[in-house]
Image (cartoon, rainbow, N blue to C red; front, side, top):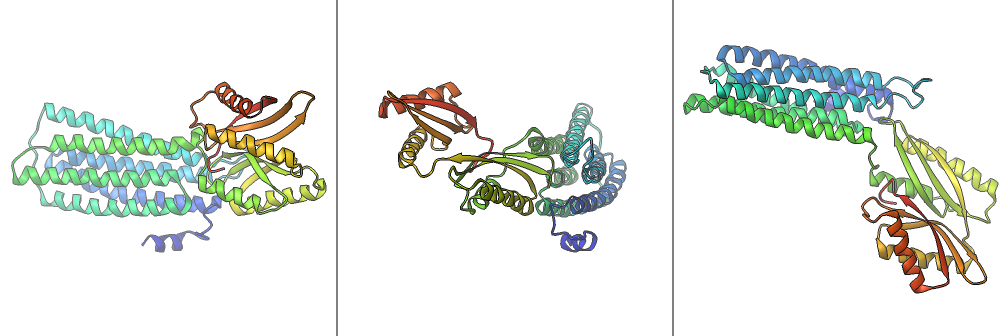
Length: 391
């Protein structure tokens, strides 16, 4: 069913990084969500009024809020698909993240209101009537929400959308919530225990948990999260496939929304290379990265000594000492100058955020290890904190 809807309504559905295609995916998700959630809300509201069940009525309002969330998703994807302009030269892609955050806020608000109403019903209990029509509506709702969760999860995976992932998570929490309501209704009828309000509390807990998880997933890209290590490795391998480049470092990825990323990095090239030839290679690599990953790239060339065996041995020795301190730490921009009484070793150290030592502590530890190997070494160290993993 999902494949049929996608192929029917989304042209070029395989080009998930195209903003126009992403916009059509968002429209499909939003429209399906609006229609189904409105139908479910109407059915549950009627059942809640018929039986006097706070849990069923609350579940109806939950679906109504889901319909509103689908409207937010629809509008968010439409706005995110707008072209870049003078005021927003990097496009409007982050609106997709904001729409996911708005959906999360709506989920949390519904959960809080439901918890408040349920607590009131526990303090002031009311008789709840039983209806097989209500049971049928709730059972149908569970099946519909299961499909909606699968549908939005599938769309999310196809285009890598946090907003759709939040919608899928919300649908799955609705399955748990409605199942709890259905169970409470059946227990009340067959066993005579009125646990309707307690089921409302359980539903609220499911909703709040889903809302918090969805908010976390949409906040991370807004705050600036570390890129996918697999993507970093793929970029690394793509660049080093060119023999003119002997190493890369200081790779930074800026996310301005799905399909709208920028990247900068330093490419190490032999210092005795033909500068014009290497410049052409760097230009070609920038074009390749843009076409392969849809990432605008700016590369800075770093000339390094590769033909001096003494420099190479010393660089390898320093790199090994640094890894003794932490296996994930690396060095780059290594230079060596010889004086009459000592050698200057000048280099940068990339320190992951997982390393709890301060910059000064890292420098002191490296200098101590160098002095133990060669007392005539004088180290000039610059600390870089790692922006990416997998380098």
